[in-house]
Image (tube, rainbow, N blue to C red; front, side, top):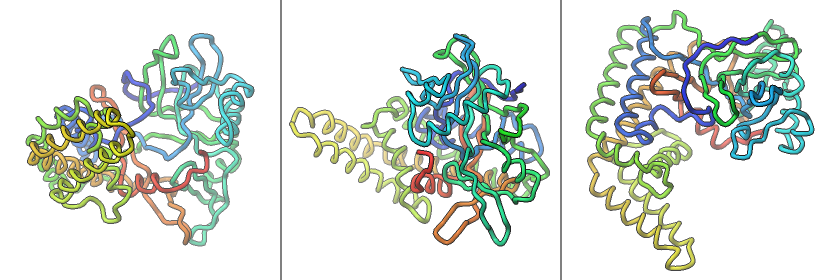
Length: 401
């Protein structure tokens, strides 16, 4: 039997946004949400009630959806394609072979065989950690059993109780979301910690964040609060412009959408982190212009170019009219990211399984992927060190894909 602790939201868990990106997605309200999340985690690390439910974000893949379909009472497994307009729901190995291929199909067959025996009631979502791809490795002279589901390699000593448990298992998974509803297309997601009884064939990792004696000192609190005040100040000055760009931030030709991709571009290509705010502001104008110009050049007819020429002209005019506000928007994004990383550095001091990045020279110690903060009102956001994990995630090959 599985139990769940968390907060309910309305959206399916198909994609979580970075905390600092909320200012682009939801404008000034997103800024307020980000500040409230940061303050809640700060309070938790100061020893008081945080007000958010915190879970560890494991770097598992692919996402696995499983449980009992409320429409027919049958057990199923699937990936996020369960939520496609034309759902891919697998009740049998035959369904898996029809809907999937390659490594994903093989992993889903293992999931169907073993998860169907766990007495799961309702529908759960988790991240797959391993099936038949466990490896014995030597890290700093110690024999470890490891798995690399996506970017991070997890490793534990072979002779430890945890290592022996993992070695015996046919698969490993961490559940973090529970769904409720009467039909598959109208499910509501609850984010949090899912606990249940495993068996020797299934290693169930916990997504729960263990609050311990790792707390902020008075000096650390003072420095963090100063960072928060900086973020609040820049958000006040950027708020009206952020509200404007959030209205069409899903439009790929908009300033808001391109500002978001611009930050990802920096993370993927920079070795030293974010540049100075003024430099980034100037380079964003060039980035926006070049992206739209490439779209214009790709169109063969004047009529095909019209929409992109207008978007380029309107976007550049908007950027030029709002130079100061854009400066503070970029400053807000950077400062919120710095606040988040301060929290991550403290939270990452608590680990039970080693986290490594595989390099050409062996294994390098790294932090966990991050955490998920869930609020009853604002929903869920991910807290990830983008300069560490996201750059690796952009560039490293994925064995399961």
